[in-house]
Each structure stands twice: as C-alpha cells, then as structure tokens.
Length: 84
Length: 196
Image 1: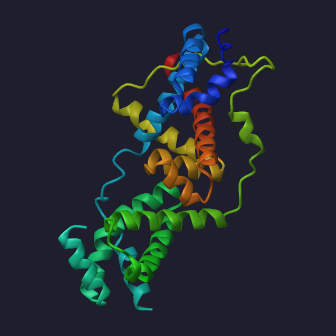
Image 2: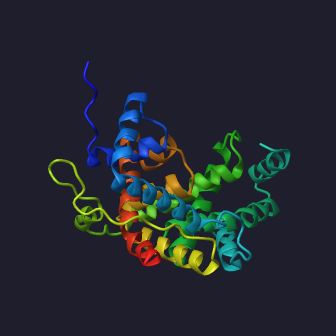
Image 3: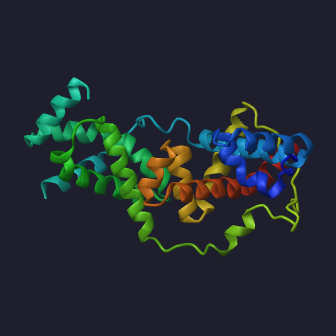
C-alpha cells in the first residue's frame, strides 16, 4: 500500500486548530507532523498561531476578578430597575 | 451550590431588599468586566449589565441552583452582550478574506511571513501587546469576534460557545480558527517590528 500523499500547506493550515486541540486521528497527525518536518514556513506559521492564542489570553489576563471600584451609579440603576 | 449562595437565593426568592442589594453589589464588578471585554463602549457595557440583571431577576424563580450563581450570571451577561451586538450594524466583511492566508493552486503559501519573535516579560512590551491585541480583536467582523471572545477569552468550550451563538459546533470551530488566523495577520506587523 502506498503512503498517503504529503499534506499541502493549505491543508495543514486548515488542520491547525484540530491539531492543537488534539482532535486529529493518528494518521492525520502523522501526515501533519511529516509536513512540518519539511516545511519551515508552516512551522513558523504554527508558532505564530500559537503565539496569537497566547497573546489573546494575555491581553485580557487579570480582567476576571472584581475591579477595584464598581460604578456606584450602575449599582443604583440596577437596583432601581428592579423596583420599577 | 455553597450554603451561603443557597441562603442568598432563598432570600432573593422571598423578595428581600437587602438580599437584592447584596446580590447586585457582589456580582456587578465581574459582570461589568465580561461586558467590557465583549462590547466596544463603556456605555454599552453598563447597559448590558443592567439588562442582564433584569433578566436574572426575572429568572430567579426558575434558577435550579445546580450551577453557581456566578456561572449562571456569566451566561446571562454574555447573552445580553450578544443581543446588543446583533442589533449593531454589521461591518462589511468583504475585506476579511484579505486577512486570511493565500495559496497557489498547488496549495503552497503565496506570501509566507518571517518567523515571529516571542514577546518577553518586559512590562512596556507586554502593555503594548495588550493594546495591539485588543485593537486587533475589535477590527474583526462581529461573527468572528464573538466566536473568538467566547472560546478563547471567556473560556467556554466548543459545545457551550456554539450553543450560546446558536450555531453548529463545526461552524463555531471554523469561525474561531478564521478569527485566530485574521488576528495573526493583524498582529504580524507588531511582531515583525519586534523582530527587526
């Protein structure tokens, strides 16, 4: 049986999210990694895609807690809206 | 649900005014943070929080108490933000494709960019990066921006994010992937400047 053809760069980029989410089958993963072993441009793209995800998280890091001050007028407006 | 929350919920259902104030003061900050991430103006964010509380007050009697109150409120404020986003005029999405990688017919990239340098711990660089990323996310067409925010920032899993947006999981995955690719293109000049 002949080996599966090498992924193209376009196919590899389509599979990136599934690769990072570990959703590729073992065969797909092998084809993905084989392409990476011979294509520096796709290695760079994968790295920059990962960095984009990291930067997205970083951009909002620390926003999950309670802010130092909650606008009093908003609290009042919410409480007022319930009474109406 | 923890005992304190169960007791608060019971008081809320008895229409206890002090409990309402405790409830609103305890959750407004976190809800406002979510709305600020999802909406583009402070006014919109505050309006969404107010709407979310109105919806929460209406839904208190039906709240089963299986989830934490904060989780339930997170869903409500996300939905209030999405409702507001849907009523906004859609940005033209024609130029979005220009932000995606282009290929020759044989599947090779037309214009692969140079490798990026990772941003280090320098606080000035980190601050600049945060500003650039937020500005870039705000440039995305709304359907991609919403998918990215729910999945990569609000931390919903694929099924939850798809259900919240009322789309199939495969469609959600496609939107998130395309949003990340477009965001990568928008950030490319910044990382190229850093590498120069």
